Image (tube, rainbow, N blue to C red; front, top):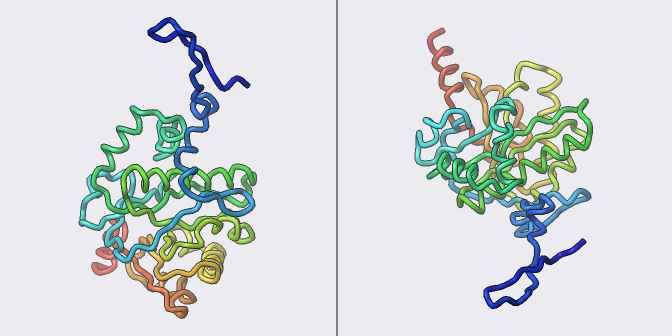
Length: 255
């Protein structure tokens, strides 16, 4: 493969000019991953999060009006994937270095201090390559939010199966803070037990100080049960408010 083009300069001389291979080969995301480390069998990009200041409200991606509800609001992506990951989604904008789209996202997120890394859905009956690619996408977006916006990004713990969780924790070894969502787990006994086991494995593998929880229940009873192992290990469980949790709390008080 030719790595150079030849051009005639202003003096009429034929000069050698390096090709932009990252652009030509659709490898522009390397400008982010080359600034961190690759960890584990599949070279997942390493993330770090050791913030002592924590979010006190979680706004969803599709509610920009809530992005600055408090000075320490975090933006999260706990939505169906097509809401934030379409053709003009943030990952594609980063992957193809689409400057128009990247400007749009910088404007959208201007002034946001915290993010929870995107929750790209993974499933046990989905092919392994797709599941692994989705966790890589979350890491790439997290790096962009950190490096380009200067935001604090809290890694979001997701997994298609408990047996694969070890891989999804690769590259988070230096994190003191991670996030979990309980949405969809509380009312399903099987899924709830999976989440409890995922919390245990995460706590045992990582040296955590804090877990930030996205929860929509009217009280924190389910959170206390699900994260009981982490609590016993001395890990702080933080459950910031969000619009759905506030609504459910209000309904519970009115019942």
